[in-house]
Length: 569
Image (cartoon, rainbow, N blue to C red; front, side):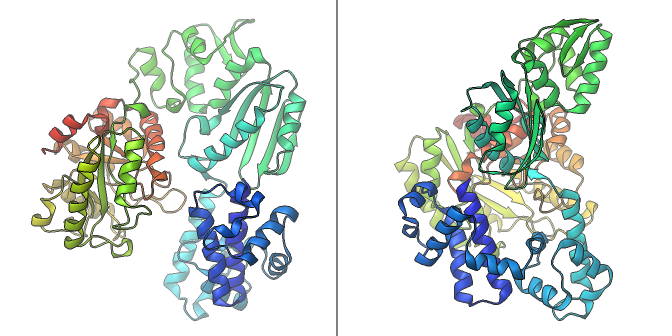
């Protein structure tokens, strides 16, 4: 948590300096320090305690001293002086796409814009039209960005909330009064976006547990602290709701507060038909309370199969459970290999060998290398010559690491007309091709659907990458008829990617029941740009489980031999 606090401060410091018009070298130094902290794999707390922060390349003596004072006192003089000039609300503006420090500086100095609300007002009054470097198109784009931010205000990506929840759970278990403890709510259901961290605890002393949480260093404010529940806000801005119950009520409370509401409404109807009543206190037969020791026992009382938390969304899972036809959900250990990873050949952080070695350490049977194609200049896409060089290196690494099969692939941009990025002569040298849209989003649904259909029809295409182009809390999906895309992919025996990046999680899990019923297949791909990001697989498996997919609907649960057969190698 200290590292995240420092990273936030360092980033804000670089922004404030740039807004003030400080020496560009000084601004760059703080930006570099932020990048260093973001990328370093060394333990931050150890370096800080040893007074060795300057060992990190990019953190000089002055910045190291500022970090130390910040951690000891909560701030430092220069930071405080800058915050007197620019209010905290100015940082909201950086969340608007394509609005950087230079434009924000102009807005602040010329129009007094220092928040999203003041910027929206300025746009509505058409005040941006008179500023140099702005115009009607920019103003319209800004208003759309503001509308998107408002819609997603107070929302957090699953990974970000989960990582913080893990820390809290670990800390709370240090209390001798905690008997049982679990995540609940949308976080336990593994929704891609959550509003809060919900926790359920069994304890013999609720007050002690509630006070224990409120005293955590990363708790920014205590909103409510009652006898059996508390609500706090973390420094990151996310809300934590903790409910404390008796040990004998834990299973019922966990089920109730896991949700979803739609699931509970349907479950209560079923319970009533069978003469039961279900609420947060448990299961009742008339006035008699029926004790349950687990969620599984609760479902058993209703004569239906246990429903995994991920599937409790009121989307037909209760009917499946009643008919004993729930899918055998895919698990992380079912995954045999990965496709879609980037190396230093394009925009990856680590070398090809680093990525392969990590896959070996993860006990994977195969890995598909897929750097960006030549049209993706912004991502250092590979030329035909680069491809030959990479393929030679793969051949060398294949001999060095015989325990893993290395497939030669590419993430090819889908051009506006639906064509792939290379000639047939180049494409024939790949074992697989992930076809993805990375530009030209301004199409209507019909045009984009036809574009992606044509890409799927290309003989070299293996799978359609991140098919709706969404960036969670960053960019809406482009318009596309995904039912038509799934139908087309199935008819061609092509794969739809389930991009496991926590920023994408695309295809949306809500489409997976349709894909499953059409007997389609996904490939759960990490879209890894670093060794660490290979662990994204877990987030993709979460989404596959929410959508009710079994291993048979996931391409990369197949063995090496089966994969070679599928790829016709």
